[in-house]
Length: 399
Ligand SMILES: Cc1cc2nc3c(=O)[nH]c(=O)nc-3n(C[C@H](O)[C@H](O)[C@H](O)COP(=O)(O)OP(=O)(O)OC[C@H]3O[C@@H](n4cnc5c(N)ncnc54)[C@H](O)[C@@H]3O)c2cc1C
Image 1 (cartoon, protein in one colour):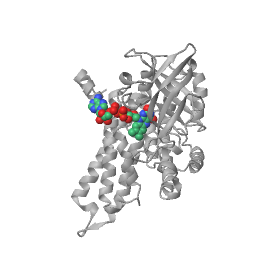
Image 2 (tube, helix red, strand yellow):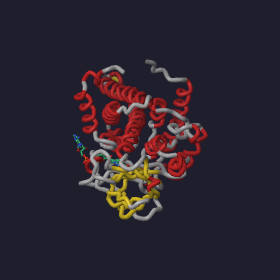
Image 3 (cartoon, rainbow, N blue to C red):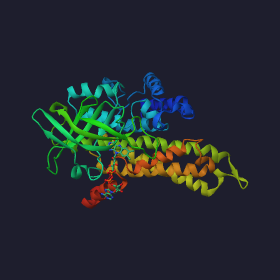
Image 4 (tube, rainbow, N blue to C red):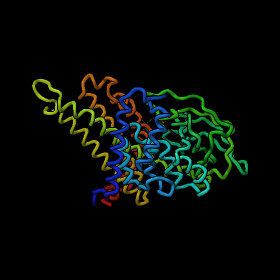
């Protein structure tokens, strides 16, 4: 086992840190940088995307032939973490959710014709995309295979879709949509994944759902599908393979969330550290107090543990394994580490931590989604426990 990074990856990591430090952190401090939903203004985003390309940081996760940097999951872990130190980093480099997960699943599973039409424009930054899976009660959430109500009826050369979806990140402003719908009642092969374009008739956005935290571009929307027609050539992987598409996407998408969140958790501590090094109380620097060291140590350790679990899952995915348990373990740990790091930083900054003078308050609101999005922590604990119950020896085996 060798955790040393190759020189090219270290250079890319340095470059990502430099982009964040030189360009993005100063913008975060300027209220004029923010547009709708407390996110980066669209016109500024275009400028930063051009700079990301010049710095060689565009689409680190996509093959070089497609215009990216060709990193696998292990390399992505390093670069995404560095970019995740700023909320603007991933979106500026075109590796933010949900486009990131959508690009990765299309690259892996789409046909060459589908890639040319649906994937390449996302990689080029010409369009944005959304994944359309979750439904309001009583429809699909934690258990999409068992509970999906949106139906796609086969009419020969096309499907006709009816249903309702919600929490569709980025739907307002997205052009390419990956939709999951029920095509039969088969318990294992009942769902099908298909692609549609925003200009097709038969669907609409009902509302942009107001949420607790800052939004992604395009918000989180509730949609109605009412007679949307999808030609059979827009089906991904074949009828009845929807859960295979969803699991392939979710494995890497959950892990890339972890990579970015680790960067945000680090940043929270970076904000707290100068303060505790300087601030005095009762004749002593905060940093010299044992209880403060205990808080910092616990948060740093939670981040480091999350990092190792993320790297293990990345390593497994890179070797073509499903890594289901490894991804779930990383997601649980990193979501908790993010909460702990941000909460610790707020506490150590005292009243300032509760103000809007630092990004900690929006990180705190943003972090709450980490234990829900792409699977609640309870569901991921269930995945871990099931592997343990199935075979405890295999569970603890080293390789
Ligand atoms: C910010 C944000 C962005 C999102 N973006 C998208 C998107 O782009 N596209 C999309 O399709 N969806 C999206 N989602 C939806 C997200 O994936 C779902 O919220 C998630 O899968 C949980 O489904 P649910 O909300 O229906 O919760 P439910 O399934 O109703 O579960 C509610 C709670 O029940 C508990 N629970 C559920 N199952 C178990 C279990 N097996 N054991 C123990 N407890 C359990 C958990 O505490 C869980 O939080 C987004 C959600 C958020 C918050």
